[in-house]
Length: 179
Image (cartoon, rainbow, N blue to C red; front, side, top):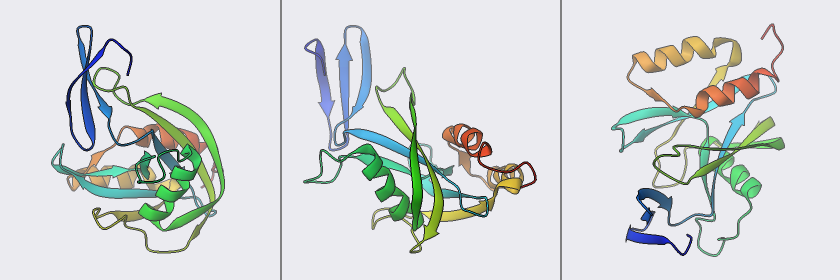
């Protein structure tokens, strides 16, 4: 926060800040946000589905999470957080991971920036599903079928996270045209 920022309210997870005439939200419990675009060696996209109370619906997303949100690990590096979130949520580890840059998620609402990572050469080491507070379903979808699969997910009532489209753009560069 800058000196001109005024904290209007702070909870365990969020902070409402006023800067001049603007009011916006900050994360109170994390140093960063990460999102991974995972692709298996046989060109399957790994997605997660979880119920999100703010939108009162299940949401299809790429694995994502917070950096620095664990007590004693406040200085956690973004890549470390990305690898941790990938394994926690999906049960996969990545043989290769590379940073793709960052983007803001909702610039009129929050100062949150999300760091994107490409995760390749995946190996499944557990079932995933998140921690005890999460109820995550892991989906492994052939890249060639992703559009139809996402349409079917929407038809059954799921919402699609906007990062799906960015992720599919990046993943498309790593999939042969015939896949």
